Image 1 (cartoon, rainbow, N blue to C red):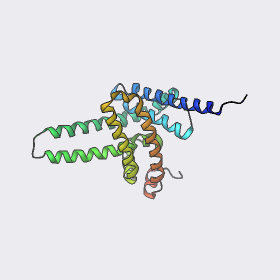
Image 2: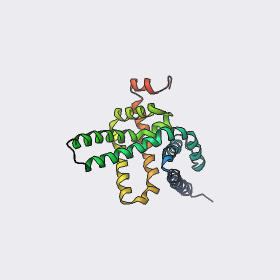
Image 3: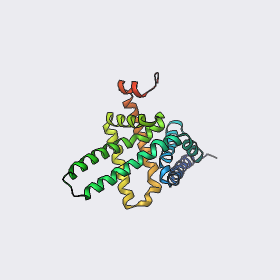
Image 4: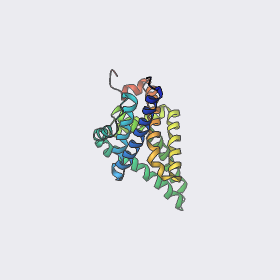
Length: 211
């Protein structure tokens, strides 16, 4: 009796979909206390990285391991970075409401900083989990990579803008959309890393000798 070749493919596809749903759920639960959103997001990207590079299919165990691995950097850098973006957004809204001769100046400065923040944020967590970057070096590296490959940065920016708009009109999309878009983001980030690593000055500054 011959096996149906579609059985294996169908099972693999369903397993992949299930893993994505589970990981998205773990990320939401792990981010429920807002101060844990950094470690939770780092853990999510850590799992995605393993899926891409090591063909590992585990979810819960892998998520827990990645959470422990990136716990410190997630708290020290990840969560403050995400909260900083929220503060910038509130600042933009605040300056739009005030009446002042300096209103245009404050709005312009805040918007520029916010745009740079968004561009850097696109690869912030991929850089964290892929290079194990820490502290200010992580922020600097993510910012530098974004500027060296602006096309990829802009593509990631557009994707997450679409996510933000979707969740604004359909908040429950949070439970299904974050991980799939993060997977695409990480794939784009890997292409960016390959491109940027060819730049001698960047390679010398951020990559270990011999890598």
